[in-house]
Image 1 (cartoon, chains in turn yellow, green, red, cyan):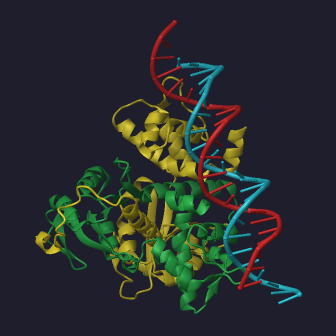
Image 2 (cartoon, each protein chain N blue to C red; image 1 turned 120 degrees about the horizontal axis):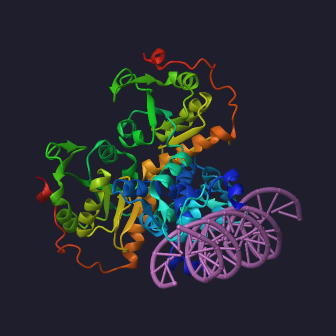
Image 3 (cartoon, rainbow over the protein chains, first blue to last red; image 1 turned 90 degrees about the vertical axis):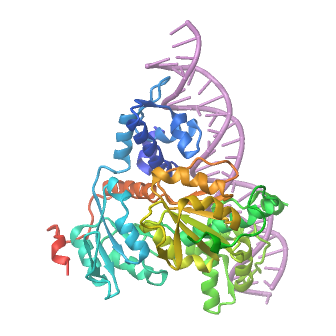
Length: 236
Length: 236
DNA sequence: TAGATTGTTAATCGATTAACAATC
DNA sequence: TAGATTGTTAATCGATTAACAATC
């Protein structure tokens, strides 16, 4: 009953976020030939208690066996299905700077069946060059290519000042899921999903913790000899 | 009263995460010479209602003027102080692959006073090379250098298989805040803060949305002409 | 059988939203 | 004064945790 409601409205976001981590834990169990994994073991990885894991997994067609745990292979393939990892997904990437280049070459995406199929940049000096076997195309071709190839995802790695315009181009090309690495928020129609990977904002929260931590724990034991040290000594 | 409690126990995590976005909105207002910004305007950027913004900002020493809004400059500098953006922070980075290289060269960190002061890698072919004016050092030097220079943050961009070991090295060097880009969870003592930037996991949740969205909205209007298209046509 | 672990219900906790008197 | 917008309290919503009967 509750399950049907969830199926319809979707799994709660925090639960969804944990699923890939459970999945990873299961892959490890399979590698180590452990046939069953308990909710507590699954939770250990993410730092959540077993009860949370069970609640999360109850949103899937359930699988656990009381007294035993979850069948690793079976649950893993349920998660693969749930997360859509069995489907091929194609993305375009806009902005071939250092970060764009790194993402285009990131080996981890392949495992999840994401292919970055085309790279775009405004810089005429970059257009025509090749990265990981893919030629860099001029930005004007993005919308049309995305539309004709039914691209499902757009990755934005342009500077913040250009991000909104690029997003609009992607949306014009029929893209409805945007992975935004530019340090800004995008204004998009409500049927478009934007996932912000805002490194600068994350850094700011870490900065807060660093600063406050200092205040909270004034005497740091065992942190160096107090003479300050100099960077130069270490340059080999 | 409530404020004191918050000051002591810290601002709720969701509020903290929004602060950098408010800060950015304020910087824009200052640039545009708008002296005051209302909570609704501040919220627009993050997609939260004004009431939420006001509640969030109430954790700071409050500043708003009824009927007018928040003084942009004043609130911005409160946020700078709160987020520790006025303090210089130093980081080491381990793992100079494509992603590590991109982060080392990322221009956005400087604004927030983060300096990546040293780069480390295990690969002897990389050691000795220079990135953004910083020489790459062998991993064995990480702990000692971090300790002597009182480095506050460690950035992990090594493969998942090496991440735990690198984290332990950083912790041995006195680092208590780790920004982890490896697709895995780290086991650390409880006084160490780990912020995971798990791109593979994020991708998996996006993958889920792409898949489910397909199911939810079966007929996609205006997405191409239906003949499928071919990538080759577009390669310039 | 005894021990382990499940799925689920109820209790708790925390964050968001609504509402409104205070005030610029 | 009238209109706008604040800070805060109370109501709502949603997620986490505790507890336990069911069961392998």
